[in-house]
Image 1 (spheres, rainbow, N blue to C red):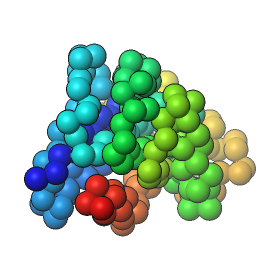
Image 2: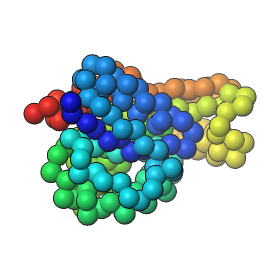
Image 3: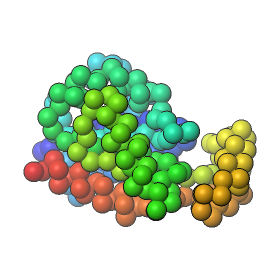
Image 4: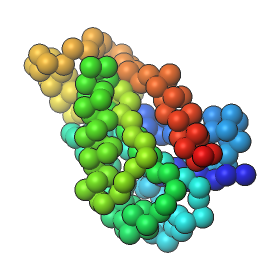
Length: 188
């Protein structure tokens, strides 16, 4: 049985939901053993060489991966550079929520970002994000205020945002395609 490591960073739970979905479906449909690791809880002694593939994932905030994922990438940079099996990267980003901008942010937040660490990925994808303005949201008052101001004032953003509820812009078909494409990569 093939095995895959998924290391992720999630601020508000959006990315965590995506990678959990991907891992569960991989185990069921792809018959692949998945080790899912939150970078926030990770010790630096992880041996990545035993896996048949790796997925690196993060939520994007102000154009940046989570600090724990950056720390993981920096610490494991040499191992990831020498890893000769498929490596994929995926992110959840509000900017990638607009279909006409998805390709741009996929390039910027996955392929280009990984290249800054000298890591060549086989597959990259940016997924839309979640803007949760509902009562009790993990966003908090400050983040809600900043996002509202940004989205109301930036005319280039064409999303229809409801500032009183949860707005989920993730494309689950795209997420499933990413998973299926990665399964195909590690099975070849």
